[in-house]
Length: 222
Image (cartoon, one colour):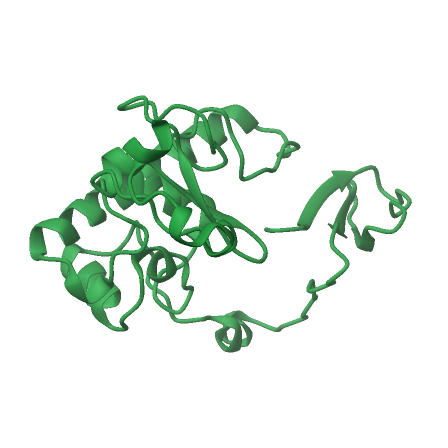
């Protein structure tokens, strides 16, 4: 998802430049696999039958099919931050970076909160938020695509509450959305809705500023 895309084209279409990896020709057209990244992590595997897919299953539960007890058990199986737990395919299938930001904002939970420190009420709130956010976005994207092939595949959308909206106002409270940067992506959150006004350390900028790094959103706004 970070850099790979599947595109539909006319049968026999030429692979695009440096990003084209493979084309699968069918009677009605071709599916083209591209990867716009120098890391080249894409791969294609040929398997026979449903049993051939088993080695590729990471074991994470399907969030929309899971009961609350199943969701709670998966969340508490390993001790991580909530952000990492939701994006770990060994625990939950198909959530990913963008929707984990949206889920945590909806649940009003900090992305750095540890999974083993949530009480039952917070776990249920996270479960409900996961169900709501994923269902809403599935419906929205299906309506947008219609019967055609999805052309604008992106994890950044203007309707999102916090993901990809650093510096923009939170749609709930109006506070500027903040971020934590990682190597390949970033985590976005609202400090008032999710962290009781605390600013989470940005691994690069907070180290650079040291003691001058603001601890609360009021300090930054001031």
